[in-house]
Length: 309
Ligand SMILES: [Zn+2]
Image (cartoon, helix red, strand yellow):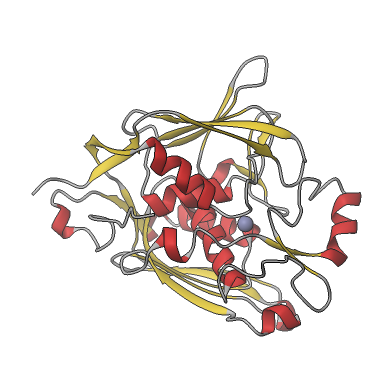
């Protein structure tokens, strides 16, 4: 039995798209990386390329999306490509961009999953490192109708339970709670296709603030006060809460290693997810890095994750 190994991709792969918020055209290149590199974002359009290795502390803004920063350089909306990396168990990757935002593509992580799988996923000769949660860590904000919280509990594996609370006719009629276990579930089938969503009433305000400039019906679920406006409807009955799980997987993977933990959240978002990671990092007796010398000791789903499309 072999150790559980790190993974990268076999060859580089490209995509071109627009940023959801900036509306800017951006070229994305995903490249293989050596063992123990981690996931490193890189602005290649600046006079000197700027690298941004992921870490809880590298997140400098969480309004509407998760933004990484280094010096004055920024890369916005990293959560969907990070979610794809988490779902596929990729440890090492360079993510090069020619502008300050990751392209939104179809608003889900399915296009990133497709790109990464097309490039081919390869095992590397180094043990995969997990961040094992040893004690519960919780963050809360607000009270009453404004209450939101997120927490991590010890778990031999990785699962997420998310509850949303939107009072909107199009959301009320769908599931508002979903639980996904990476061991028994199938990320590409059950989570990756869930798109980001927004309300037409918010669009004016967002655009006035220079946001959502690249957003539209081909990269988001858009709703008016009553219904979904996309002519093809929803991809999943519970697409809204599944997208929140997709986002949370991306936000949490920014910590730099796959978590061994049970995540649960009520109305959380990018900001609270990052606060949760920072609270975890600060409490040094609440986690440790572990490897598995034998695949059979690893949680189900990590040893033989489903790579089927
Ligand atoms: Zn999202």
